Image 1 (cartoon, rainbow, N blue to C red):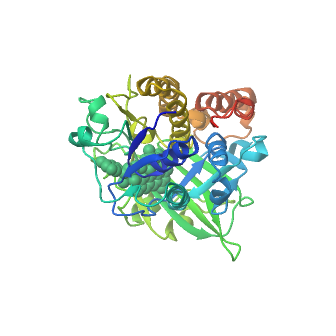
Image 2: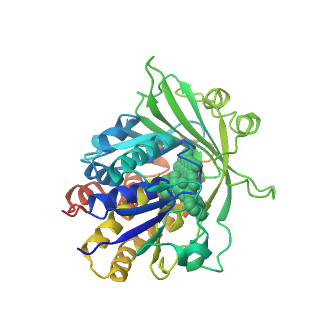
Image 3: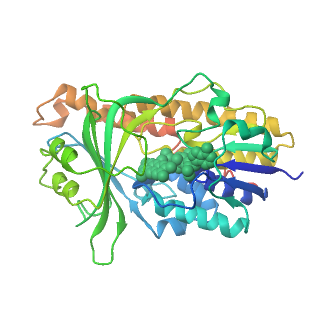
Amino acid sequence: MRAVKVVIVGGGIGGCALALALHAAGITDIEVREAADGVRELGVGINVLPHAMRELDELGVADQVAAVAVATSELSYHNRFGQMIWLEPRGLAAGYRWPQLSVHRGALLSVLHGEAMRRLGDGRFHYSSRVEADDLENLDGDVIVACDGVHSALRPLVAPAEGPPLWNGVTMWRGTTIAEPFLGGRRMIMAGVLAHRVVIYPIRDLADGSQLINWVAEVRKEDGRPMPRQDWDATVDVVEPLRLFDSFRFDWLNVPSLIERAEEILCYPMVDREPLTTWRHGRMTLLGDAAHPMYPVGSNGASQAIVDARVLARELRLRPDLSEALAAYEAQRLPATAAVVLANRRAGPERSMEIVAERAPNGFERLADVISHDELVTIAAEYKLTAGFDPAMLNDRPSLSVS
Ligand SMILES: Cc1cc2nc3c(=O)[nH]c(=O)nc-3n(C[C@H](O)[C@H](O)[C@H](O)COP(=O)(O)OP(=O)(O)OC[C@H]3O[C@@H](n4cnc5c(N)ncnc54)[C@H](O)[C@@H]3O)c2cc1C
């Protein structure tokens, strides 16, 4: 194998996963250029689905992530009155060989980054090192991978006319609250419709039996207000989400009480971008949110970035011609992730909640009068196929590891 130097722009989830994946594939000449001045454990909860956990397992970091996460074993959808529409097992309980982990984004980043630092050795991560598009020709690498997130500085080289991310009008308030476990302590729930809903799941078990609970409260507002800042640092006060979700008091969970007791609250617009026709610009390609930012529907953002990393590392290792390797990576990952971006715009697996709200806006006596079990099963199964985590397909497919 000829020596290849890879420069990774952005040391977030995708960038650190790529560093680990390249190292495991035998490519060790790696430089990571990160704009922030250090690893900052910002953000709130994130999910790592079984298709990404398989990759983290094969990279030897799954146990470390599991130690700081909650293994989610159930997912349920409810209407705005708390009535249940759908309940399915997740992770190991659903027959996958890998769990679904719900985790603080900062804790996940800390594991991936810590392990990448340890394996790559000193001097590979450069902080306060923002890369701009003009810098590309001066970067000393055979391959440059833009892992610089939804506001990627390098993506305009591929899509010069694109402009800012596209907002669907939904504002998300996101927070974490220490509270008693609900519904058994391993459940992720969603209630409402995309224009007015909550997504809630535990991300950490605490020593006293309580849990750190992640919640997202989403509202589409038609009042012509400008898009909120896209800044994971921007904390806001509790008044507005509390007012908008005052009615979400279920006999199994009191949502306003969770919101009211939050440690801090972030506010973020729900954005994505149009899928591209290519991710390549010479020796550069895109990965993760830089390549395919998607709505946080179906919990796939971080998972798709991790799978990208493994496929790219494998192709760079197996193909002596680097431009062929970048083309092979793109041929596998661009259409696959574009399908997820588009499915998420149609509410992904959560479409059943939209359908039930349309047919029974004031709730229902019998769910079967509103939607058939077959329809619910089909919606859930279709999304798993689209996003690459159909249980049989994932369990049986060959590994992406290269020896
Ligand atoms: C601070 C932060 C907090 C987040 N919190 C959450 C959360 O709570 N829940 C959730 O679902 N998702 C969160 N996300 C988004 C989530 O991490 C991504 O959707 C997903 O994990 C894909 O990862 P990524 O590596 O492609 O992008 P990101 O994880 O966004 O990483 C991009 C990295 O690139 C760096 N960067 C950006 N521009 C440049 C540049 N020009 N030069 C060099 N480096 C650059 C950024 O500082 C960042 O470290 C957060 C992202 C960030 C940056």
